[in-house]
Image: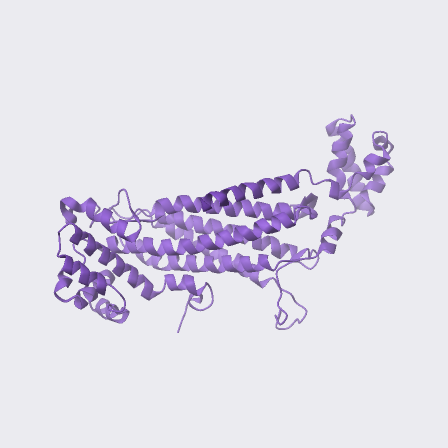
Length: 451
């Protein structure tokens, strides 16, 4: 029976299948087979032996159950794989794992698993990017109240909200392209990284293995591929999680009953509460925000895995068995849920407008101050005068502009036309142009991707 929720509750079947026991074993076997082929190309072992090893380096031949049996006896996971593969290769088995140490196989296999996982993450990020670009374009002129410190500030647009997230997602795609260049590396360097066990043709053996597997060789290693690379990977995944956390948090806040400007989709038969039938809880975005906390916490162990004793110790191994699959599967879940929420995001235009005018035009204090300075009043004088009137309007519960009209000191600077222009819809600056610039920048990068 499954214990961890990533086995039965979170993540797509596609992502879980990458990190399942059978696929991980297959990747280890793939590396062993590539090593045998490299040896054969250089004349170190018979071509027939490389052919047999390659044919039988499969979970159809090497059963996970048999590997576990051997490991239970010898207490060494990679040697158990080597012995199980050697068994099914008969006389050719004597050439399995020639010159290699365990982490030559483990780290190179990890790179293959990470490569598959990042391809899936990249696909989700591009889908998320497309959705955000569409929403930014559609809501470029949807004026809403901007909030700072949780308080009404000045107007903004929903297009701005979506474009900010869009720009951030594009940066993740940019980062991902860079990270793949550094992280997708393997090694065939032996026990401490000198490759002495591979002889004079060591670097050629490594080159052939990595070329065969679609990876690059690490420039230098000890027994491990440097773990700053894994830490960078984990920090990247956590950074993506933080963007999804940001999106989820904003939607949850905007869905609050007293705000209710947008809402995550709610199914016709969906139940919001076991006791309160009226509830429409933002459970999807709450899940996204919650899972982000787990991913953040996995960054610290990845950082601690970088400093190890001398040329290596084993303290990183158990940690990576947990944090790599867990983080990828949970991020997969977060991405898919966020995409689903944004695809079905529900808008409440009447509430957006209601909230825009909720403070009875107090949010027009800044444009009024700027209008006064434009007409000749000093900036600091204008700020203090407008502040006093704003506090008065708030205390008396009156419309700010009505209070302003009663101020002779202000009205000697302003015309009725000036006062009439002080509407929230008129104070969004160049927000539409900013959104257009973001969309144009992203589209340009999409075009380059297609080249």
